[in-house]
Length: 485
Image 1: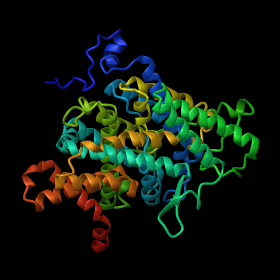
Image 2: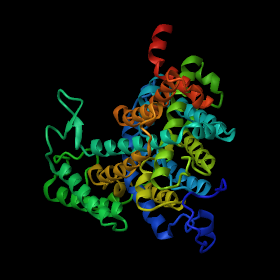
Image 3: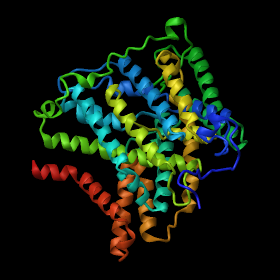
Image 4: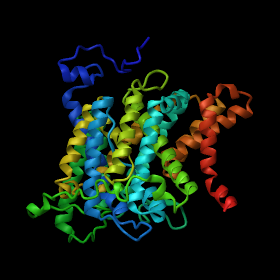
């Protein structure tokens, strides 16, 4: 029987030194070189957030019409991610990287900022992070994780895989909103150099992966990036005439294109106006603030849980019951990341599904996110270099990782109606609603409902009934607000 601190991937190898012993590198069947390579792969897979988060948070207006600024948000996005990754690596010793959460940043920019000043927005994030930390320290967050049936945990992992694949396809422009259909292949077909770069990167990554070449993911990204720069230099004019989805690759022309002095002036913005929390939110109304905190808390809580499950399953880091030994440390580090996201004015920081890129390279320990964090810290100085990697070069990795995570679907017992239908809803709703939290919510609600109508309500853990009720209220938030209003 495994001890609570044992790793599911325990190889029985003796550690080679204190670093090996602390991070359990040999124990988990990894090497220091593999961990470094995994950290690099994760960094390149998620470095886009340093460019994309500023375009969301930095350009959105708050209730007073104020904006934060793209350069400022870029700097704090990178530094918050760097500190959070280092903290995750040291505290949890798992290969989970942290940065401003996609989707969560949209909620912050377009759902919360319009009703309060930016300083109050980030105060709200700090409060949400403190609540998360309390839930971790009291054991509630871990208890909820343990209450989910193993089959549903696998379904969550599979759903995250499909979600990652869809993110990769959409960010590369390979899949787009259609005319007359929700989605379609490209812009009425596959055309343009960016799409070709994506296809090239995907084919190279697949070839390297099936040949089991070490560093397949990273080599795929680097190869596609080099070709993308070459294409832009030869055929582009620097004005995105080729149609890159976000980042236009280009050769640096001088020192100014290599190094950018970071502007950290946004750090501590939440302290403007003092710490009288209730006084600052009195004009908005307690009910509104409570609903906003609840929305952030719910999305952050289950986005993190789903990502943690998905990445851990992919790396063989979960035990036979689907649990992750030491998950409390993982969740505590994640909660601190959220607090840091509020303190640094960089939005809600959470575990990144792109951590799976590093795990796909063989990363199994906290050394990998520490490498990612170190690179994020460097990125605060070399933002122009980070932005050289276009979506089209990085996102093929997400598609391959999606495939790797999808292979776990065979272990789900679809003959069990509650587990089968619950798993199905969790898997399809994540990509179809572009939300990990939504997928988990519909999966748990379906599992509880089918268990109830089939007379097996006792198989549902009491905590799952409570969480299902919370999700039900959350999904019914709009009609409830309409009735009350």
